[in-house]
Length: 174
Image 1 (cartoon, rainbow, N blue to C red):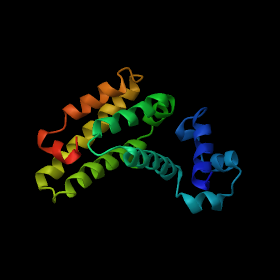
Image 2 (image 1 turned 120 degrees about the horizontal axis):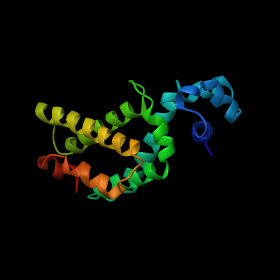
Image 3 (image 1 turned 135 degrees about the horizontal axis):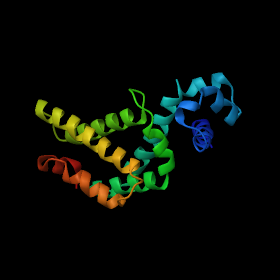
Image 4 (image 1 turned 90 degrees about the vertical axis):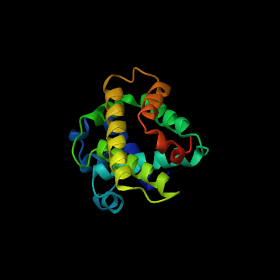
């Protein structure tokens, strides 16, 4: 296991029993048996550690997903979140620019933007639409996690897809 994954595993273990706010970098170091410099060689703080993990996981899913299967990608992401809903419920309490939800918003923005840029530059109106869609995506996922993931991953994926303007659909490779 590489150092990044090892550090994250220790962090994830701590999240089983404590809230994110209660966990310090020193706690992560102790859990993993690593030095302060080792942690900071890899991450600037615990928020970056959290973002690293999610980015790795989603990028892997995107690579494994066939073109034209955006719905399937969403379902796989939401199924993972449902399986790990206690972890994501703890993340609900973290707010601000370094929160997981801020990361997810930016990731969503970048995904939509990059999909359009495969074909052309987006218009100013489309940039605003991307921002709006991403805020809605994150809000829907947060509400879903907060409610205990009552809907199936398929139902959440279909809801999110229903909110995307029709003219974006060809760019998302459905």
